[in-house]
Structure formats: C-alpha cells, structure tokens
Length: 43
Length: 226
Image 1 (cartoon, one colour):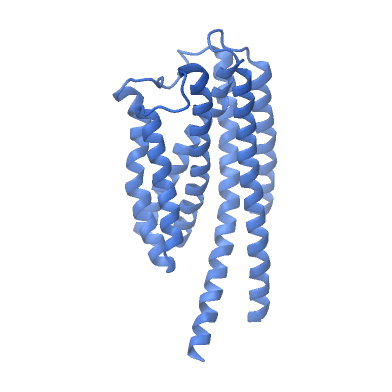
Image 2 (tube, chains in turn green, brown):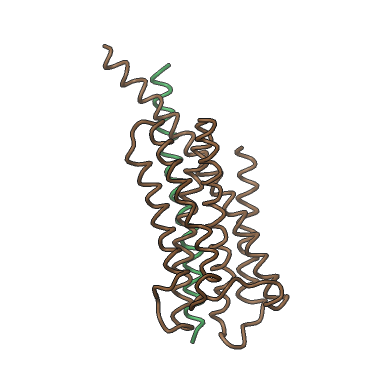
C-alpha cells in the first residue's frame, strides 16, 4: 500500500534533479551561443 | 573547471544510483511504517542539503558585504537556486511521507511551516535578484536578504525541539539501526556530491551571464554616446 508513495517520492527526486540539470544545460548552451556572437561582434 | 565538473557529475550520478538502489532494495523495510519509510533516504538528505545550501548563501553574502567581490555574490546566487530546488523537494517528499503516516498531506505544524517560510524567503531572494538591473545593487540587496533570511534556517532545525509537535526530531546513530544509518549516510554523501556538482554548473552559468551582461551594458553605453 505505502510503496506507491515511496515510488512516487523517488521518481519525484530523480525527476526534479534531472529537470534542473536539463534546464541548466539549456541555459548554459544558450548563454554561450549569445556570448560567442557578442564577442565576435566586439572583435 | 570543466574536467573537475565532469568527474563530479559522473561521481554524483554513480553515487545517486547506488544510494537509491541501497535505499530501495538493500535495506529492510521499517517494521511499523513499511516501504514508505524508505522516503527517509531522500527526504532527510534533501532537507540537510537545503540547509547547507542556505548556509553557503549566508557565508557568501557576508563575504560579499565585507569584500565586495562579485564572485561571492555569484556563488551565493547559485547556491540559493539549488537550495530552493532541495527545499521544494523536501516539502514534497515530506508531504508524500506524511499522508500515509500522519493521515494528511499538509499540516501547519512548526517544522513544516518554518520550512515553507524558508522556501518563500529564498524564492524572495531570487526575485530580488531578478528585479534589480544594476549588478552592484542586485548583489548588495540580495546579500542583505541572504544574511537576514538565514535567521529562519536554525529555527527550522530547532523547531522540533522547541515545539515538540507532529514532526519527529532528527534521527541519531543511537536511535536508528546501523543498516538504516548506513543507507542514510550513503544518500547524504550522494546528495552532497549532487549539490556540489549543480552548484558548480550554476556558478559557471552565472559567470557567463555576468560577462554577457557586461558586454551588453558596454554596447548600450557606446550606442548612447553615438
């Protein structure tokens, strides 16, 4: 009966950390791309 | 930094998988609570790491206010964001544990309430950062919030001793079986490495964002001069 709560909790933990990791990666890629464009425009 | 982060990321993933396998399949289920007690191996480390993250925000905020070095501000902001993630996770996992054991998803008891307040404080910290355009003002204002807001963190920890209501006090080596303690410490280590890794990634992003902001500000200045 209580294993449903347990499984939901673990899935939530993995999901939340994976989602944050994914979001960081996307933001990092986007920022780097814009930064590279701006740097080359400066040069 | 890139290579260190890669090693940290790999270690975090490996430890996290091992910690979850041990918590879910290796350690025996609690006789009274059953499988739901296994949530302890993610709920407790998430709560500890949330507090550690906000302690880092506090230290970095103090350092910033004393030295005015933007690096401390960026580390504080990065740690606050990761801390908000762990606090939200702590509340959600606590709610999932509370329903089958206490009979409710949420109750306004001191530990839960002070933790919810802690989450609001650090969401406020991030909001302050997003409102201020000037980097110096942003760093100064958020450092003040980072120092003042930390007042709630020891209150969260001590709430179970001060009010002694529904939430149990922290487990100690004397109050839990050795195998439960082992699984708990293993997951605490895994969560700590995950925290350090995410902090490093977020800090790297913050450094790039700061440089971009500087370039854009420089260009805007040039345009206004022309």
